[in-house]
Length: 150
View 1 (cartoon, rainbow, N blue to C red):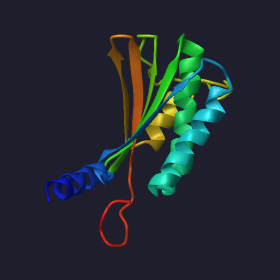
View 2: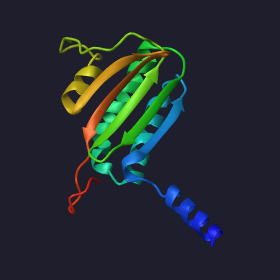
View 3: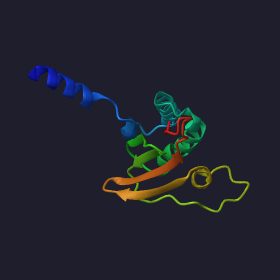
């Protein structure tokens, strides 16, 4: 009888909790990490059933990873988490200088990454960490027809 109770408890503990969906990956500091980051995020969102945010998340993750490659050094960590109403994507790098939205000339070819974050995300920001900084954005998770979050 005791064995049955323990086995039942182990099953209950191992079930995934939809409000605690998280994934992270270490990226090498090379241009190949940008398309890899896009694939990882899109694949994870599809696995979680929230691919409606895939295109926006893909674009914004590209911008954050590219920003880390251009302005930081060392390894980069990409993390995504999904709560009941919010998808959050984070990129950690070793440079403590925080990004900011710049005024750009329409003829410039770059410098629009933080502007895109500002326009396309629900919220975004960056904070210094012990090892550099984390830059992040959040997107709303669409509700399902039954009223629950995807």
